[in-house]
Length: 250
Image (cartoon, rainbow, N blue to C red; front, top):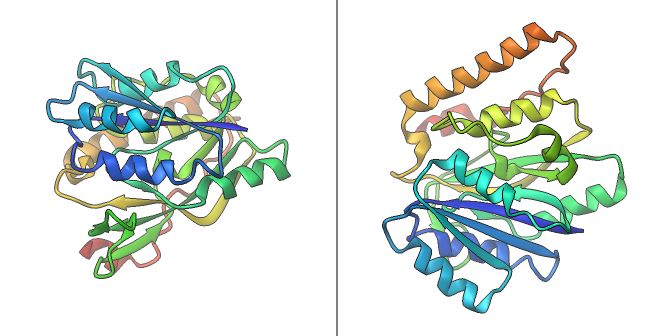
């Protein structure tokens, strides 16, 4: 059961090494292929990845001119090896939780019809990059939010859905997940944490105006598809804030 993890990178020299380490520590449990797409970084991101790949051949680095995150994700999909049966994503400033993939893949082994698992994410404003987990003094909140990194996909499902819409500068993940669930996959919502989401000043989601506009655009696209085809299945609730007050402070 080979798993490919796609990581788009753009100017994340400071964070990409811990992100990759969080994947590499799971390679003893999972047959993992790590596809890094450097989307025209102008800092040392590509050099940092290349240095890690020297000692970790599971990491494959591809570089392209800056075209945006949707195009970077598509580039990763085009580099999937023929023997990869499962696909996930990890943003280059986040961390994959130890043991996450082993546990998720066990779900697929137990149910041959399963096509998708979707887990929780813990947002943290301070990360211990040595321990690869939230720092002891970090403010955290655990939610079921919109994140491709919380999902583990059967490859056949992604083949059916196709590529990301490169017209989205943000919320390409919202659009893609809506399209995934509209296919009516056999999915399982898990109550385990898949990623530690690093809150920092450079988060794309800090651009609330742009994020909201693109998010609503993805919703409207889904509404148009549903109007054209009322038989499309319902999409599960994608936000389950455990403590909204803490979320606002974070």
